Amino acid sequence: MSLSLIGQNAAVSVTLKLNQVFATLKAKGEPVIHLGGGEPKSLAPIDAITAITSHLNSGEVRYAPVDGSIDMKKAILRYTREHYGRMFEPENVIASSGAKQALMVALQAILNPQDEVIFPAPYWVSYPEMVKLCGAIPVAVVPEDGTFTPRMQDIEQNVTSYTKAIIINSPNNPSGAVYPASFMKEIVQFAEKKGLYLIMDDIYNTLVYNGVSVANPYDYATDFSENSKLIIINGVSKAYAMTGFRIGWAIGNKRLIAAMANIQGHQTSGPSILLQKAAIGAINGVQSSTESLRTTLENNRKVLIQQIKAFDGLNLIEPEGTFYSFVDFSAYDKDSTRLSNFLLEKVKVLTMPGVEFGMEGYLRISFCGSIKEIIEGMDRIKWALDPKSPNELFIGERKLVRDWN
Image: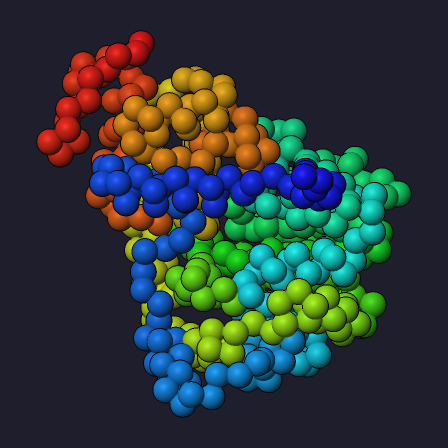
């Protein structure tokens, strides 16, 4: 059998693969705990459910416009006005089947083979593969100061004549870092000066803690013409706990959005009209569920940080946003894949290996589950790694015996 170069080289999404592993083990009755998850446990907002149910009961479930319904666009424009303080027109908006598709279609609309796309490490696992699917070259930039916050000099020294775009994800998956306003100002002005596309992956922009605020890129932009290369990506998956609804969007100049719509039209057509109705309901409805989710996550974050700090040998830069922590486990094993597999095999705790996010020796540990799962999962990890731990551990009625050093 002959596969294309893309088919041969496209790597599996490790986060989705491990989610599948978790589901399989759970179905078998294994006492597995998922500390690598990427979706909140909260239910979708009631306004979303009411809206989708009402439309489903009408029986009028038809094709949607390729770039999203006008009501969906109005909701996105309202969200953008509220959270970014900017007014745009419907032609500046495309709704997609998730923020991931919006980002992928944006990349397909701007990249040529051999173009380069820069993004700071640690980074979301899909960035490199999405860039490669466009025939372009991903360029990961690891901060040289040992933090999770990029510096302009780190970015600048990686810009070449082939550089086409920069992707910024703040709050950041997997580290939870919120990039400072000073950096955001520099990167926006730098991209404008160099004529580079700046793609802001803002899917976690409302999930921040301890009074931290996310810098608004539009505050530092000077070009709001149709030559603007600033692209904002967002969606309802994270802040509204609507991961399975798969509605995201992009804001950009009209020519870019039109090109993205043409591409999307040949890929998937418009996103489901039913799911758009739910997203509209969530955005236009009562927003108490989003604050309730943020409060729950903030409490979970405190518990996880306490658990990590009580664990000898772990290093943590506390997350300021998202629902992830990126923990340095290199004192125990510098090979994060091996360590992640070990924890899953020995104590049935699923974590995400840091190498997949561009930094070895780390594990991404999520706090979007329950406090019970966080405490028990970290207790199991500590038992597995601490040589001073008792020889036995009971998980329910199952007895685990340490057969390793």
